[in-house]
Length: 344
Image (cartoon, rainbow, N blue to C red; front, side, top):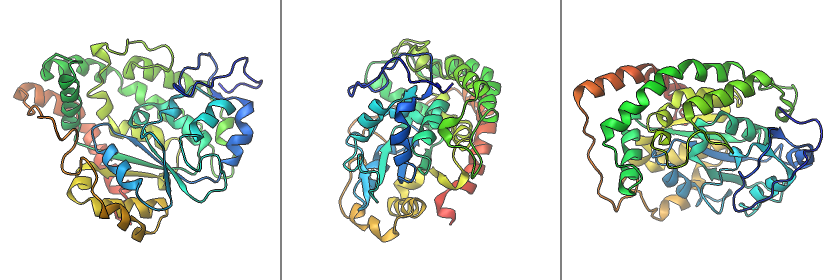
């Protein structure tokens, strides 16, 4: 929960902003003046999903006038368990105008790990309540295969794809209820209500931690799986986009969240870039500069220079996975219809 007193420690490691270790989670009172100064700051957060074109979109948007892109694409700051004045200053140092709260430039970062982490949504809204959230959605099986293929190329996972999928199916079935509990226990204040950082929802924090440790198999400073543990690859879990969008909508209003079909980005990047610019409140004409110069990766999904392993799966396993993710696909189709910025 949010501490009522200043925390007895400070976290200011610019090399790894997530190295905080405390049972407290939320906002340290010493960060409140800085957070108050950011209340009106515009930002664009690309929160996922991995292997769906987040790097491509980030590089395109970084060329748009009026956008202040982070020095590194992935800051991963909102994985920080407690926001302090110190680590918030380190986060803002990623941006050219970060220290200038009155700057009209829109902050931009792309950290695809955020999407699956409900606590990241909680920390983002506490810090940047006016941020626009962008999610790129890709076919779940294709996304899982792309993630596995990258791990294979880097020799981090030597399992056949079918075995990796089989080992995740059980966890998927067990986590539907835990995922729903996170969204239903949200404490997002209504319009005109209390500030987001005042949220003190013990039930929500408990459900979020339960979900992350049991389903995402991830926890900020005490992961239940070692980093290189094969069970932590989360090929299917990270493709649970509709579930994770629900958890972000528990904190951000619907008009601040956009869900985009990732294939459209590669089929027509100009159209998607203009749609995102309009969604962010920028003039569509501002994207002309971004489209005038080439961006690496434009012609392919990911790591163009590498030979990809074709997606091959036994029909029985493919059928089992398709049946498992069918509800997720249906809900994702609803989000794409309702939250795609091209609809306006």
